[in-house]
Amino acid sequence: MPNKALEYLQKATPLAESLLASDSRSERVRQLCSMLYVRLAEAPGGLGESTVGDTRAALAYIRGALKLQEGLAADFPNNLAYRHALVAGYSKLGLIYSAMGEREEQLEQHRKALAAARTLAAAEPQHSVYRRELAVAHRNVGAALGAAAPAETTQHFQEALDIFTDIGAADPKHSDLPRQWALTHLAKSRFEVEMDKPAAAMASAREGIRIVEKVVAASAGDAAAQNTLALLFTQLGASHEKAAMNNPREWANAKDAYSKGLTIYEKLEADGKLSAADANKRDKLAREIANCDAALEAQANATSR
Image (cartoon, rainbow, N blue to C red; front, side, top):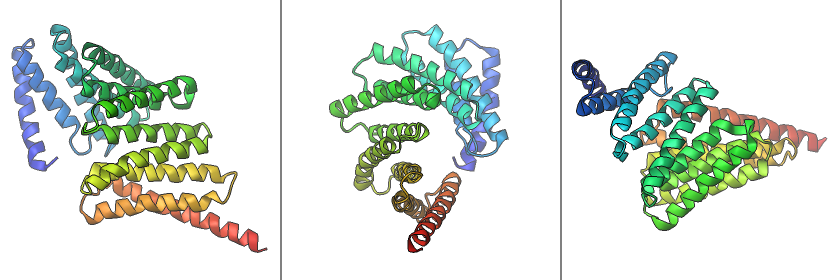
């Protein structure tokens, strides 16, 4: 967010809060305050992208937005837009708690988002955006549960993938579908590594790569899709690295996958599209590749003896 836009938000928010203090039941003022809080939470450094202080500030803003959104949804139960805002709000709060390492709170908020998303999807079963939100909510609950509840985690991932498959068949031009679909395979692959199932993790990562590569091929300038592809190659590398614990030949495959992820980040940097957070991922990949080289060298030395 440009500094000027952030400056305007910071000036507008106290004015909106003053209006809210004067008329706390105003639908329009509650909407306005809620929107401003969400925008401030998503400003640079929000949602856990910078310091602990930034994350705490984002947490306070999203809590403020959710309090207003919950009131609007209760007062206007037939307004699906307010229920949709609840899904987004609970999801954002879950992401903040994830960044803070507070797993129980993260899971609680994602379960709330799932409940709200189910209500939306039941109200309008053919609405592809609401169904996509339901799939994402299932994914987030599965990712939050992880190895603590393997059967439930697997069920949530499968429900998410089933929904994405149905949406893809009915609405193949849905704008954000492929990336969210691929991110679900990414989350599933991470869970499978955690469960010591490297072969399954590789298959999930490759499926995600297959989906998002089509997006990148169709729109080479799509930085979000490129970043997702880099995450998937990184995860594929981690899956091969896990397999290398029992099969040293997998180190070469791990290096190849990590290198492809690094190449994407380097291209993003050359194009001026690499965020500060992704710069850290690039550096981490360079270290992973160095670890692979060390393992391959040790393997070669052991073979030559």
